[in-house]
Length: 196
Image (tube, rainbow, N blue to C red; front, side, top):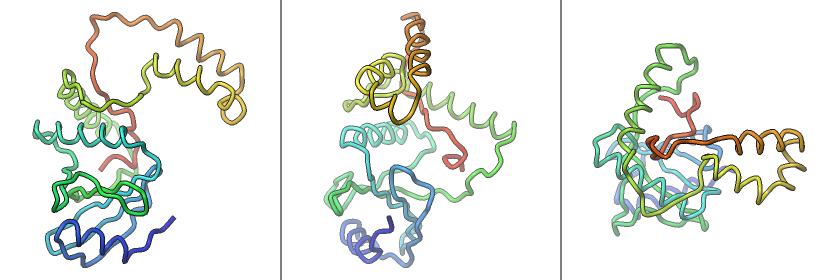
């Protein structure tokens, strides 16, 4: 779904006091729409959340704010001229981030995998003791158990066979992690289009 560029330009210019020279759709988002904005104040990424719930957006922004405090290289959120993190456009939450120059990794070799592993390790270690105010469900074994319990019929009809669901439930029930293991927030969406 391509949104009205004039609407984006008008909303962003009004809320951030910047002048947009050019807007280009970035066609790599699944759960959101991303646009590269060239402005009189540099380049930015304008993000429109299509499906995320408010608590998921707050969780994401809280994590990014924490990473900024720790001086970890990550997108920096710009506040609107009224000091809001998000604003609504067509009943969807929107944000503006700084832009990092680079290219999406087209081929992931061992060197890039090592860099990713190092950066993820630093990210996870940085967030190990951080407890955000907002919370969201994740992919931890208990979260997956709840998801299967709640949505078993839908998953069986639309996604996985009963035998696969039974296998997953059996595997999840066998997990027994020690409470002495470190816990924390992890980035679980590492894929080539998220690597610059």
